[in-house]
Amino acid sequence: MRYINNYKDKMQTYNKEHKLKYYIDTMGCQMNENDSLKYAGILESMGFEKGTEEESNLYLFNTCCVRENAENTLFGRLGMLKKRKINNEEVYIAIVGCMTQQEHILNKIKESYRFVDIVLGTSCMSIFPEKLYNAIVYNKKKLEFIDVSNSMEEEVPIKYEDKYKASVSIIYGCNNFCTYCIVPYVRGRERSRKPEDILADINRLAKDGYKEIMLLGQNVNSYGNDFKDELNGYNFPKLLQDIEKIEGIEIIRFMSPHPKDFKDDLIEVIKSSKKIARQIHLPLQSGNTNILKKMNRKYTKEQFLDVAMKLKKIPDVSISTDIIVGFPNETEEEFLDTLDVVSKVKFDQIYMFIYSPREGTVAAKMEDHVTYEEKVNRLERLKKLYEDILPSINKEMIGKTYKVLVEGKSKNNDLLYTGRSSQNKVVIFEANDSLIGKVVDIKIDSEHLWYLKGTIV
Ligand code: 5AD
Ligand code: SF4
Image 1: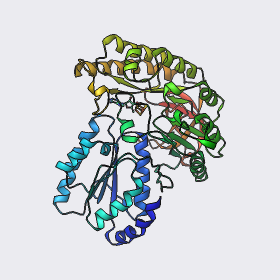
Image 2: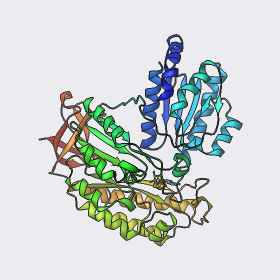
Image 3: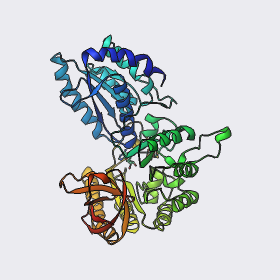
């Protein structure tokens, strides 16, 4: 990171006297959470200390624009911070992330929230230290629209909060342009990180005692499509096989793959792997071929079911998904196709969303006669079906033994510990502190909808 060093020392000197504290508010997906860990690493290298929401001097909003509610949250919180600024407290506000890539948001901040100090886009981590230093020391505000560049942040001092699980970005951006989705507009085109950089990161994490790695990307199975010359042909299955060889790493997860790119070679690599988690996230979005076409998802109901059923043949595999209800003009029959796929695949986890029009996307211009009440009703029916199916999936796990990474004490009971199985199920069991961070074998005794109880064997 070219720029960090230049401003690191200067800001550290300032912070020796001012002792500024930072607070990061992260909205949205795991990519954003990962970016926030990088921002925390940058800030701590500049002498900032982590503080609580009430006491901090620097508020960093790492924003999301995938659905509308995040906008309301941001503007509500800014309004509250304004009061502290008016009271002349030493408070700085920085807004970064996806939302700032949208011109109408930037205009709104310029017009109505001029007290904000810094606004930067999604690929601006390298200039953040400089802008921050100037805003704090010289009172130079920076409210500008920064174009999505092709930059990739390497060598950022990432500050993981968890000691045993870490996420690693492998590909940035998206080329798919699903018609409802704003991500390709705000995160730019696909850029794969070099395998040597990813493997170096994971080797370092393994040496530091990390056991579980989550590989991140908007579309992880497009990894490598942009490689040329000597890297041409290096793809996601090959990356997984190289990560498998890293000693110390015991569990490998990834998110999100696209069903259209879920080819047999990837399924084979998962099947033969001892480390890849028996949990696959396979975003359905809709179970109806006509809606899928309007969404530009590039697969049919049958093609999705085909991939899902191949995956279900892997012993003990669990499948999670994302579903959008109430896409413009979605009919009752079309919605029933979504319920049909849910009944057939029996997803272990479903992230459900009501369609939210995003300015600038193709779907936002489509006619929509489905009322909001109807969309809420569909969401509730989907939730009900999912919750009806879940106990039967969990019951199949009773009596079997699974590998679980012990994460720590359970929040509600001091004698019990919690962890996640390879299937990403929360498991509660009796243990002791010496097992934290270790992978243990647990036999499942009972199921409780959102978690399972078990015994170490
Ligand atoms: N409305 C509702 N849900 C959306 N998602 C993406 N865009 C929208 C939108 N405009 C959901 C998709 C995606 C997940 C991350 O968010 O299901 O997989
Ligand atoms: Fe959005 Fe589709 Fe890209 Fe996922 S694959 S980020 S839903 S455009």
